[in-house]
Length: 196
Image 1 (cartoon, rainbow, N blue to C red):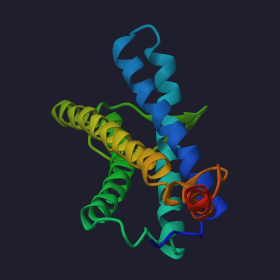
Image 2: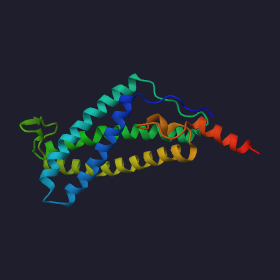
Image 3: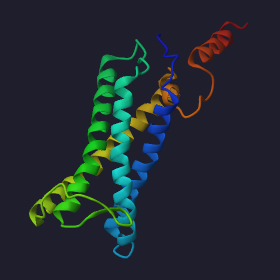
Image 4: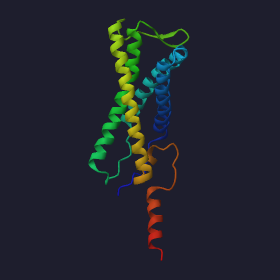
């Protein structure tokens, strides 16, 4: 079995985990905005700047990823799992780009400014149009659901690699290395099996 011994660099790990926290927070804030009219104004003031921050972070993350080599997947990983891993990463990046851009366009189509803080507003990227706003709002909602589904699949795959295969894939992006290395774990198992 080819075990990846290298890890993503510290900057990639910080981006990954900070974006994970922000994206999950945004999904919960989005649900709360829809369900609570009293909290909606304050949640919008939080939702919009975090969305733009995530757009900037995903651009930085993509540039960083394209310039750095990522750890290899284990050689014995079935082909369908390799394809699924690649497809899920493309889906994650596409959704991380699309969500803030569609949100920004949706706010623009509603005729509202995207307020970052104080008097700092972003320019409109879509014309003021109620029909377009309705379309973008529906797209934003459905893409949020798709993003949550892909995140759950990503999490399930990470836990599968960490707890079932124990092949070191999770370790490459773990915030801190946890437990023995996969090769150390197998060495312990061999000693236990060989013991009289």
